[in-house]
Length: 505
Image (cartoon, rainbow, N blue to C red; front, side):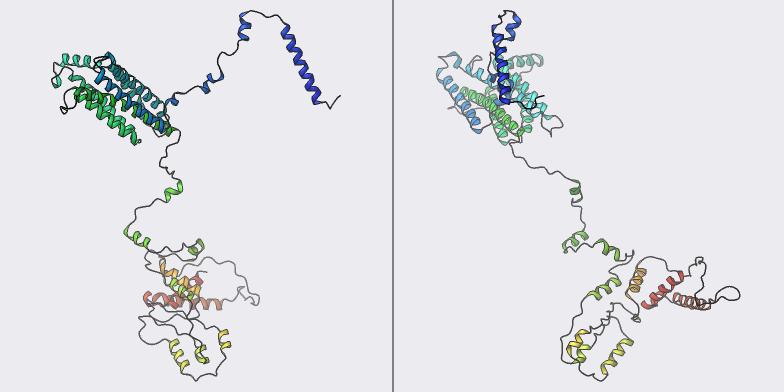
């Protein structure tokens, strides 16, 4: 079995086999049957005739501004040539007379209206693919195309006079003192409504709106001149002004459709800049501004404080319903955190080692507390020997908590800790009803004797010490509860809460 083969040798063998087959096919006799003729038929058109390379309908729409400018110039130049031929050669050449139905100007007007109808249909084919047109407003372009096609036929077949005579025969009323007065009413209702609807449709293109208004004004001016509703100066020929208004009106109507079809095509290709529409997300809906009250407006003017973390919120006790202002526990914590302003270092050891005196409250009248008296006695004592400033700095002065503003009554004892103060503040602010009676004790578990306690004769252990303690605590609870709430000091409130918690345990 051969695994390796030469590529060049295989290529030569393949080429030789193909040459042999070609030589054999050339020696065969030719047949003249119809099937063989069809099989051997060659292409009669070039590759440019395929669908992908043929000119599309939208390629007729002028895209560049130069092309649109040339269309405007060609229309104005054509109208000028027609008017010159009518003024100088109407009597010489029959088709130069613009007042005749078979004149060159009539055919050009009919052709312009027909091209306008095709452009309206082309605009419809493009506009139907717009995404935000949910109500199908693009269908109005079919009506525009139909009306323009009817107008192009009317230019050559003169439907106006037939419609006017028929309505006059039915109503037996002659409008505007003329035989053709009825067609003015019909044409104004039909094409006037089309003009208004078209202006609403093309409002996005400012140039199209301007040119369309000029075209409508010229056409209505020509209609008024034809019905002798508008008088011109004696030096201006009426016939020439009438034909100029009609031809320019039709030409500008064509340029209006050309310009808007160009706008629609460029918009479909994404070449026209539009205002970007923001897509609202779920997060943006929450960020929408709400109706602010007077209180929220004043609060917004203040500098925004730092948002508290979840641990800080859990650490702070909750306020009650009727707890106005800040809690005293929070004030005491803030005052404890604030650094105490140290006095300037002096040479004497008394001033360096002297403790800071607590400040009195605003309404703390009456006798001084025991602590104040003891502080005064210490100040009157003889001076101690001087101490080096290095040793004084190593011993930090103990800070005494400041009083609150409305701290009436006896000052709290120093042995009460910060935890008891926070518990008392929470009990004061929350709306828990005050317990007037001692809660019922839950059935205690089986008592276990202490290691150094001997059993008695009855088999029970001695509980005289515990009973005596419970009785004294019960008496103290009753004494504190009988006392009015506003007369209780901070230490008494903390003591009462502590006794209740101990009795419940």
